[in-house]
Length: 220
Image 1 (cartoon, rainbow, N blue to C red):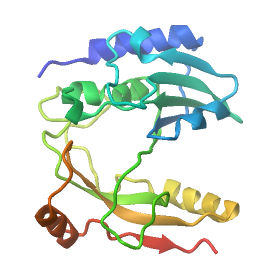
Image 2 (image 1 turned 45 degrees about the vertical axis):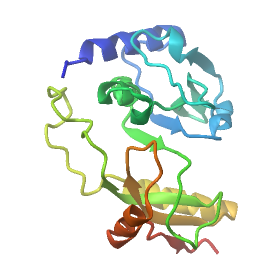
Image 3 (image 1 turned 180 degrees about the vertical axis):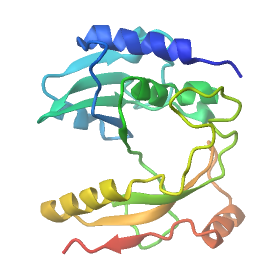
């Protein structure tokens, strides 16, 4: 597997030039927007929009409804980079390509990342449109996106995933939901590659493993 740090650096330098960021300026927050959430980027002011296709080395999404834009701006005093569109392994991309946007965000200096998506559920208490915080995950996704990659400082070779989803940021999300009068849930995310849906036997197995065990967070 090739080492692709030069490609990430080339894309990052292009983003900095196009958005007017100097080399020493870091972006505070990265947000990867899933299906139906592209309008979140409209909250950024001022806003600079860069198409995926114009960014060197950056793969383009092939799934319908994926906008394929990098949007940079601010919400209040927080600098934000939104990725409108996601690359999926089931589309035939390599893991290097699928993880390329995240590595580019890291190269921009981002240390807090919010990832959103529209997902199905095995929990019959959930309803379409429910909001769920991921508190942990079970990955049945092969190959591991870090497999075979040369270590890229400051990333560790064996990253600790005991708190992959920030407790502090989840508490903030729960408080914000309460302030807005929203019901929010927490659950365990099961990652599978797709594109086929799971068989009844696979769903039964995933339930036994703990998948779909969401609970309501008290937002009354």
